[in-house]
Length: 411
Length: 227
Image (cartoon, chains in turn cyan, purple):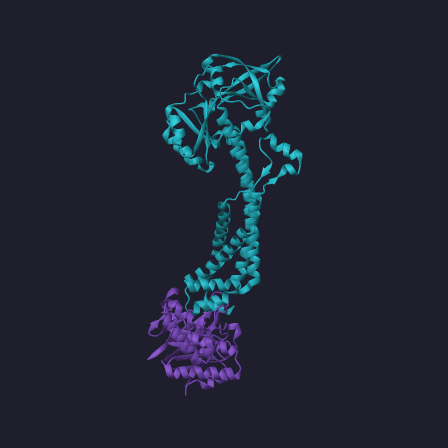
């Protein structure tokens, strides 16, 4: 076998120029493919991270059926079991308890519909960085009886820090909900939708307002490591009664439209990669055709002196796969500095244009796109090249199968 | 005892379109240790006969027995095994593997036979010295002259200890001196190791050295002379 490997390796370098051109074409295809995939994955990773960290968290626990109805009547009481899971879950930093429902907000002659979120101020700040979004006034704390209002809501109501906001709603199981709260701070979100409707209350204040003492509509899961999301969700699902009592949802199930948008974009990328690889496939096939044709005579000689067709097939297969692997490995090595550079120094589109920056911020994320330093992207390209070369190697194998020594040596 | 025996061997190319009758019923017997030349003009059928004897091509009809075995009944894989273990080929164009050194070329068939390293090393050394290129072991074919390449080809053909050597116009590309050297080497090996040599040739220098000359024309044996 080592002789066949040695022969295959030497055969590759018989025609150095052709080999280098073939390797070069594979190198550029792999380089482009890896860079494109890394940019795409990096950008989507950043978008997902921004959106998920913006409000939802990577996962949530609700009463079963809450996410479809999103009614306060589906609120639940945090049990000892839930508190225990928060401690026992290896990758759970904390649960962020929330009570969420809609209300009518009013100030003087103005009123608007808002989403009132009762939350644990410190935990909320730790997970979504809500405290960092304060543009006026101060962030609230547990024990405060005050609201933090989104800047869009404040604009609509013409309300400012220190003014009193009136909230009216229907509480838990139809109870009347009404209250007035001083505005402690204003927060600004990139997303206009969030900006026009968010009002935050400390959890206990919101529970009292909605008549839902000690009740929650969701527990957002603050993870230690987002890569461990799947195992954490499995852990929670296995510990909780998800058949009848709870639903444990990850962000992909809560925001399917975001997942779809990512998939649509990925499909676009795959189409470009497909076209690229089709071109490369023809390039490699051209080399294989030439290589097979010009070595027909030699193959006839090898058959004559006693080399088996299988041995010759392995040798040619090795040559083609090694050619592909050399190109793929060179491409991987060549692209690494570029991917690493843009991973460490993400492209900031905000620097190029204020309009672009504003457009991205409207959708709730920063216009900064790092590449993803994901080895699976690298290896996937190598595997694709190996698969292509393995398929293309069928051609010389078929030729060898049908080769007749006398005809081959006749030329 | 005959190591090669053919009975009414015929070969027709393109039987369904424009038939070309290359062999029209060849009957020959070659015994162990012969130094035989098959001669005839171009297109007479000598290379076709050599190919059929060597198991490289199948006859259209007839019987071929090589080493007591009817080779016309062997499968493709069996024929490859048969060639590897029984026949050494020397070609007009040397046909060495260009990416291998002279030593590796000679050793190659023994590698295919899974012979042990020590045996291979010793045999290669012996043969390369016997053909007079013991100092060219690590040279690639492109670094050798035509005569030297053909000597490597002879050593390669002898390496697996075949029952006989089939040489198709081995001197066609060689100058007089190289031809004489090569024929000396082959005659010497024929004498010392009792290896059977069968040449197809129209080179008078080879014909002069052969101990038996079979002449064929139009696919038929027209004379068979033993000297």
